Figure 1 (cartoon, rainbow, N blue to C red):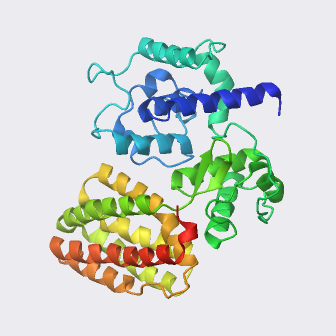
Figure 2 (spheres, helix red, strand yellow):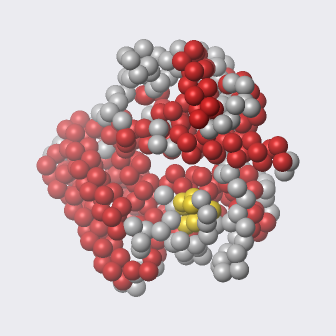
Length: 383
């Protein structure tokens, strides 16, 4: 890697760190750095345009060819989710609007904003947006981090199998996730991009992208001095996540139960049967995903895409607690989940919002109580 390329990478991470507390500005930066989309089109985006976006897929715009559509990177999705959590916004709001009203930002305002960022960070060797796009834009598609990690003598070695080059970014992400869930990587353990890349027989670019995606899901954290580490579990964070889940999901299922369609009901019944089949295999990764699919279908007809998006993010944040703790349990996991699902389906079929709310709350609370017991059993794994 050339010295110039590494300097661009460091500058990008400096900008990201500076804007971390301002998710709307960070989101604007991530969009603007993509050379295949005009700033004019970006400034017309509304909040609802990103609700159905998929990671690593282009975001369709009202005008322009597909080659001009921005790609939804992991950084864009993460910044958008943070914006939803921290701001009071509506789905029809402009994503990037003037602070003095509901009008879209102008090109002049964007230029002034970029100039402010560069001035505060002493990055004035960049001449403006076009210069930033030319030098930093390509780096945003791989979501790299700023510095190469160095292997320490006290770090555990993880045996990551080499991967084929087909769908390399997705494969690396899945392999890393599987190692964390399987226990090959423990909470708090360092994740060294160079070492992982060598063991997987890939470059560091897909490894860094995977680490960024893992961070968005709550499985990894980047610390200034230690670099990347597998996320440690937090009692306080655990309580907050599940308190929010109970509040939002109970509200969502009440709304969905009164509005459910025959199609959604059929999909929900199929998801329930699939969950029962997966439960027999005792695979924590597959079981969590099957459970997630069931729950998201249960809320499908609630009529609030924003609520669904926030719930989805909370599930991302809760997955390490389910998967890591359930994997290392010395006692049988709760077996009431299937019965809860059956009763949830019955309540929704009968358009019974109170019944649906009751059984859903039971379905959330029982595993929470179980995880609390596990936290007491594994205090070293928890902050």
